[in-house]
Length: 379
Length: 125
Image (tube, rainbow over all chains, first blue to last red; front, side, top):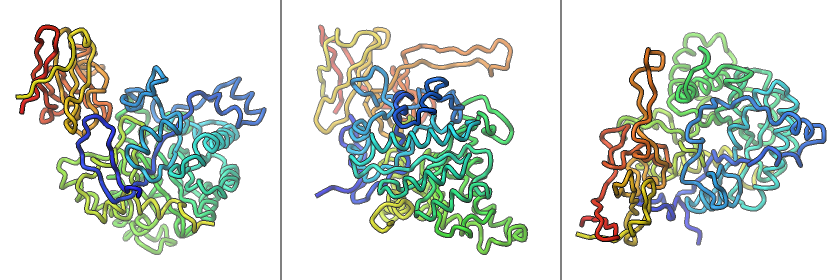
């Protein structure tokens, strides 16, 4: 019988108690290619020539001064001199899915690649997304039922994004649509609505990950310009997520697409409480600007928006952490994300050490399973 | 008092380390040679229980003032004397087990001595 729950066994010195009896759905696993040339077979001749001539020429995703070469230093493939950046399915199985007993891992692609949202040329961005999705299909999917995909789309040309969603929506392993948060307009803008309409039509949630474009061609990472250090750029993430969430709510996206689910990942979590509380307070006074909103903003949030659990703030006391989860309505809104294989990852065992069993089930499995198009009822 | 021969002295030259699991079911131990001195640390990070002793070596990174100040200097002191956990990158002073970013955090250390060619770690009770 398959044992359910996190069961880390191979880490030297590991003594933490596994979380037994709870499925683990990991909503943020970064898979990666080793060399851009690996995408060549999935590009048309025109774009092959473009890649050979110009390279990926992606604007920096977030900041380029990410320390420690981004990844956990204990992850090294014996065949590689350098550490592994999750270049293969076999590596991910050996280092993540098997030892931690992960039930589903949602592939979200490499953050440096998210720079495609900052590309000036929307056709190159769309071609890269198509190629990356096809490379993922060939090398990562269909070989392991635990591996499910958030297909990459480029938001800078909604028509091509819709085509890509329609092209891959019939695949069982397409369980979400991934769009980086680094865009030039907030996600509630009507420019993007055709994308959200296609997602809703196929029963696919949007998983928007931080990164892409900021510090590059489209926007600054903060509303006050370019910060100097990587830590500062991390501190700007909650503002990015807040802007997208409040935009989605105010523009009536969830009135228009009542079955759409929208996750915002790797942007921390405290912001979500601030958005819910602050929007509810403001709405009571200035609701007349957005009269299409029939409910409190926080009600739209709790029904439609999901928040990734990583990177988690470490509260001053454990008690405060659980008070915060209560304020967040984490049993509805929080989805577990490991961020494997990055150095700031959160493992499934020590991240929330003292959850009640019901909360654990919601955060580690049910919230994600209800959002992602996993199962047989989607066709 | 449990004493265990971890290695021969030539197995751990300066800058090197050896990670061993002396007993089944017990935490592993990393033995480090820092500038000719031997130190043993528990291979569990007190932060999130990551495999601390597999991390990378660094030093104490210091600046006497912000870079915008006059005569500001960025220094790496004691390069190789600090261990960073591969999960989350918290730095620990190998000689003392002290966490450089949180004085309340410390990784367990064990006495090490050399007898003949043997490196012996005292695991305590």
